Length: 136
Image 1 (cartoon, one colour):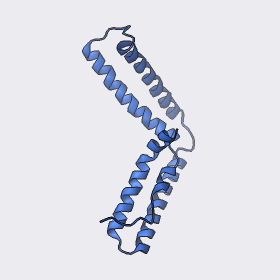
Image 2 (cartoon, one colour; image 1 turned 60 degrees about the vertical axis):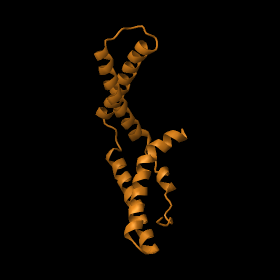
Image 3 (spheres, one colour; image 1 turned 45 degrees about the horizontal axis):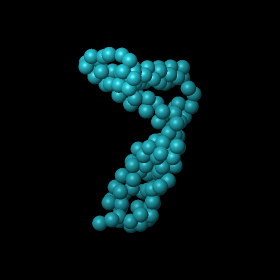
Image 4 (spheres, one colour; image 1 turned 90 degrees about the vertical axis):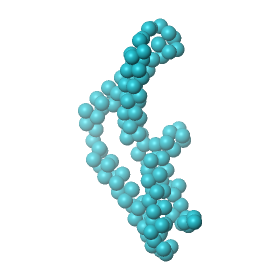
């Protein structure tokens, strides 16, 4: 579970880290750097809060999409397991390529849906050291 949280928060944490690095390069005094980093963190929290407000109420379309992509991924993964592992079906090369590419796309969408639904904490950005000094 900790690994999933780290992966879900990696994007936000990397954005904050890149922003703090830029702030370290632009500002010269420690007070300016600290103020810039605090503003950056406030912006990240405000952005997340506005996204939560926008999607506070679930829509039937959101739930339908999530269920559709989950069922499609399960179906294609079962098809691939039957071909590659159990060898109970025969597919031509173009069918294997087609199913694999569709499964890859659906896996990406499913990952996005899971990140949206379950990756809403900001614990990963708390690892940013606001007092770090620029390394030359």
